Image (cartoon, rainbow, N blue to C red; front, top):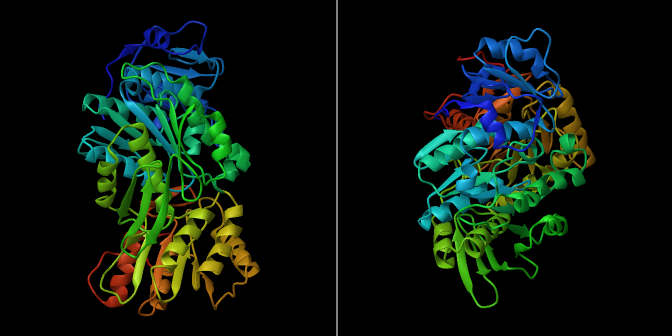
Length: 527
């Protein structure tokens, strides 16, 4: 990504909401970051006092890396040898606005679409992107997987979260320079609560669902829902754009979030449903192993048959959300949108089949919440006449309730379950697996008969595949597209798809990739 040319901090703050306390340093800056390690010469360092780290301790490192100024909410530290700006209000919002100003507010030149929800965000974002591209619209996309700008694909990070605001604003600026007119931004609750998507000036907001997730961070479902609602509330605050303002919401009438989001959204709303009266709805659903089909009713007078290779009943809702946005709000012809869904390529790590010629099915899916795991296992059950074998874990330093709920789901829906590592971070993996095993027993599971604890994820995948008989289906859930696994504070290279291919190659005695190494592995790295 290109770096903005230097601009005077005084000039930038005149284009932003009131944040400054006292005089603004007369200094030119070329970028802004909250991470001292990424500071480049001429950038501003935003010192943020967080829960686990205090940015003020890293001011010397930022200055050593070339910081031209420092910004924070506290008075200037004693002996600071750099221009300092003290601000009021939320510093995350200030950083987002400053990054937007540095890039000349790119979101105001784009039709900005935010997609949020617990499950299905990336899939729905990808569907919208594919429909708009098929309709000839110049569109970019930022997801937790990657940023797509024209023909360029940029990695947005290891784990599933919205990028930091300076990165988002840089991506948006590149989209403007590339001549794009629309952007779809996958928006997480953390991204909303932490101000990462402030200054994104959204025109439309889409919800998939709001189920049990991130309660470790938000504290309660109600707080989690309110965080999602920030996206919909922001629509009325978007500045007037030369291209006009939509200020519109796409809501899931089947989800428990509907009543609240309907209340906080602007008046212009599109609803979708598989069971209620709505702006558009689905019936005659046919979920086959290689294709999902349903009839979409665009009001009372128009109905079209929709077909997509992305199977799973839950993808009906994702399709409806995408169609509601593209057809009902953006004016894409319904026939064009339906044709686009028929040619939609698979989304990485979402019900992705891995086939090395084995006599059973192997699938990798991102399902990492209780609801997503249930939907994935229900879909997988419909794809096999044999047994269903599940491999999954529960992340450390995250919502502990999931550790009880997910094993209960798997004991109920799968024939065999392998409980394993999934980003234990600084928590004890053995303790996490103990919590999961107790929940599995409470749900009727029998350890050593229909569920096992296997700390090493590679070994868990191996054992699950070795347990499979002809006609069975093995599904590995929780990591999907992600490219790393966190133990303590270290990210180790990990890809479930590579791991499944490696284990299958070992099982079948055919060439294949090497099993990625984790600290739980008995093998030596590179052996």
